[in-house]
Image (cartoon, rainbow, N blue to C red):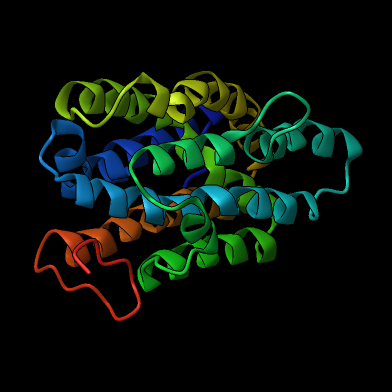
Length: 243
């Protein structure tokens, strides 16, 4: 970049990144949503994705630690509650555990994360470190993959319900909740980024932060594809559905 973008132009560039790089384009997800996977492969996906889900509150707390403004922390903490739960709301992590349990995975085994792929762990931890160590503007920008999330959740709900006889309505509660939660989160984060990215270097950093986050999501699916689709190279210690 050599020229400062208007806030609207910056948003357009951010949305272009999603159109080109979001993980709904990954072959693994295309298989998952179209019914091209066995139950064992869906189990492996749900098990590994749990580590991402249960790490989101850690990411949000790391980001909030960089917020000096109380009002911002109050705004952002709803994201934490959405996943960890509060009051009568069980939270997204618990809803994900209902999915893994319904798929036949032992709850304690899932929570232990003992069987996840190394690629999953490395990608998720890299995301937490990024949010913790980078300037607040970049940390918030990295969350903007939520702009593209409702579409993938809609595809997942309809595709998995239609394609797998082992998936029913009780198993897609997490995704239905995110259809309303994600757009709410985006409204604040996108407005903040468009307002606070005031220089060319800041705008470039914002775009790179979103690219980084798409890489985090894509690399998790790379690891799953290599282990459970082709060439089927399951690392030592990782979940082996046929063991």
